[in-house]
Length: 146
Image 1: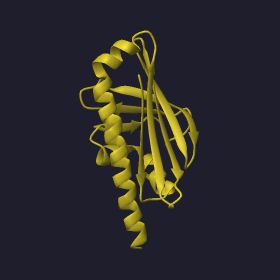
Image 2: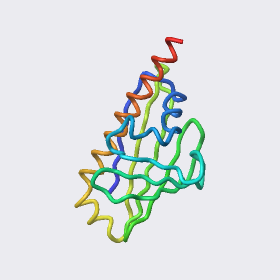
Image 3: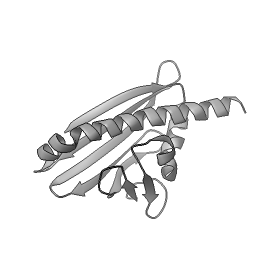
Image 4: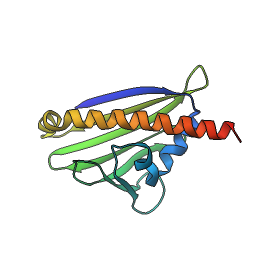
């Protein structure tokens, strides 16, 4: 399964990044997460994060790549499936942010997991995209009022 969604936000990439970097607050802005627990520090390459999501088994994700202020990807492995999620933000021509989230699954059981769980996974990616957009725009409003 490969799924990607892109949203535009009336916020700067820095404001989007600050929302992403505050890992423990993710459940505040997306209903696709019930808890996000960094295991040993902030968002950085090699860091591990324990994530609990509604109707999914808890999973430990490892940050595979990170470009501060711009992108990060993390992955988790289950029985016969590797899931990789990418998060990217870039400046738009109108000084806002374009946020792109991608999820990919590979491995011998990926087709079956995609069939059984694909709809829920796509829904969670869409909820995350909408949530980070809303949280970043709220942060932008707070920053403008200072």
